Image (cartoon, rainbow, N blue to C red; front, side):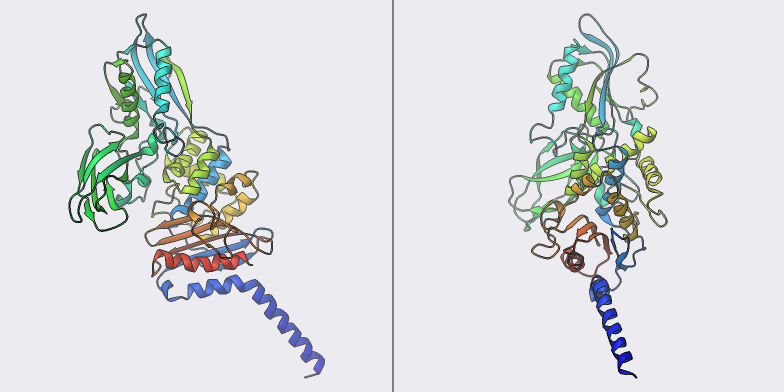
Length: 488
């Protein structure tokens, strides 16, 4: 072979080796992770793209659709920001049905018309002890109208959001716990109950010393035992609208007060009860107590036309604040509520099904819905199926949106904030990965953006199902990939 040709071929080979190494550094790590012993039998979907060029940086089963846990919140928060706008505020309205007599008697009912405000009395937006401040304001409004007694009832109405209870695919193990509180047209106190347990010696029964809020008519069966443990290993079971709740499992022994949170069975009737109680405590007697449109079959009478007068409109928190908390703290109720608000604004129907319908309609020209299965807005449903490619398509679209800066601000930063505080600490990915995490039994997922050291802006998604190891071991594998992206 002529010397010049040999030199040219050697140069060409060297160039291609160098180019291949530069392009495939991320892919090499992904391949190593995919072939590791812990991945035997696991499902592993990965995709990373260069947002400047749209080119693929790395992939592994990027089109398989699998449950992703809370990274699904990226879809609900993006849609809410795009459709509702950053400053949209859900409203709860108070109507009077009937007239007020000269002696201050309302000859009729007080109606609470729910507008899907999931922040009403929320602990995330109120200091401890101030969750009921809105009730005092409502009572003051009614008093200023001259009302001294009510001949009818306090009626809560969340019917415009339907009564599905929980989205498809939620587990029985989840729905009685606080994180399994379903979306509803009326929400109050995060749709959560705080139980205080008193525990004794290991093996002994526990006692419930208090609960807040009080749920009228609820029967609570406590089978929780004290144990020589340091964390909460208890579970609360109960279907939506059912007043039977069951608690099982274990709590740390020797605690005077250990808080466990469950879900409110019926937020609609709960808010009616709360306002009725506040009015009675202020001296306004209610002759016929409190009711709920679902429970008392009043859906045909809540028309808000002739005979109804709007006396108060309570505005909830803005979408931008809700979206930030949704992704930073991974709040399921907020994610579900945002999805329902999308359906409510666009069609007047605030159900999960309508929200998903409008979500697909909005994104259908930017994200392929082939193989995309969304059953809720929070990712708690194991019936969800989302691929890494689906996430990257969404993230790419949001990167071009006028709302991108707000969307980016909702994402935790690796090693710095939110649910990513413990991710990539002291590693290359610290401060460079901005993403939503997702964790459920046998599921670990991350999706978001990476600002690499070379100045590249990357969209990525990683989901692993059925990893043969601990959650921390799965995270360590994922960190290898994130660190490779950070130095790409």
